Image (cartoon, rainbow, N blue to C red):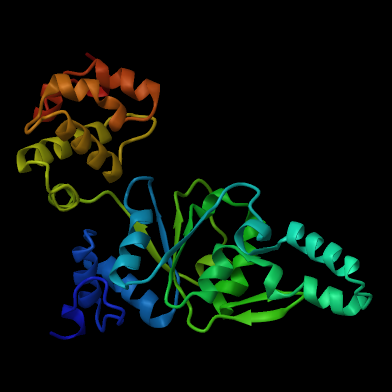
Length: 309
């Protein structure tokens, strides 16, 4: 069995997009040819893959699947407004530095230059996800929801994603032995700067077609009957076509199918579906709109449009 036929979890890199696609499918993540090529190039060329699309379309799950397929640890950085280098890159362990200083003073150490060198050494450095990814080879680094971070934070990533180095004034420039496989995700709540995108391979995540979405449900939830998987997927797609504040993604399709299965359903049950709307809809207005629908008619594609009863 060649490299591409090795089981998921092999530490060798795949030698073709199809080889990586096979491994991702073994990890329970179904990809089309375009995404398989993008991921293969990300691994082979050490280029980050920039995943943009609606929430719930599988962007974050891709990083976990890649980690499994490459037998590498997944390091995750969740972005948010106000995130800076101390949360993303590194920080100094001030309590331990202070304790070390007190012990040195009590011991009569008077060489201030020596003390300063000791205080700002790797011993007191706290590595955050970006630095840990450089120190860990191989690894998969997920920079999740970069669009939530400030634009200034994007500038922090430029050196890392182009040179695979991190500059720490007290220690100098640190270079990763082997660049991590990087997955950046964005829900497009704002436009990410072109300078960052230029360093990446771009891939737009759309909702999968019906057959592929059913296949995803069947692959991820093998305990769910095929009939239930088909009917839940059909119902979610019907909801997705309505005027909702937050249309459900694939993640919600999985959640709804799992919830119905946990309640003993093997086929579509409109009453159970109504009581479990919280698994698929996340806004009160959307739930109220769905409650007024005939969910059996919705499944058949005959429900009145616009949320009317």
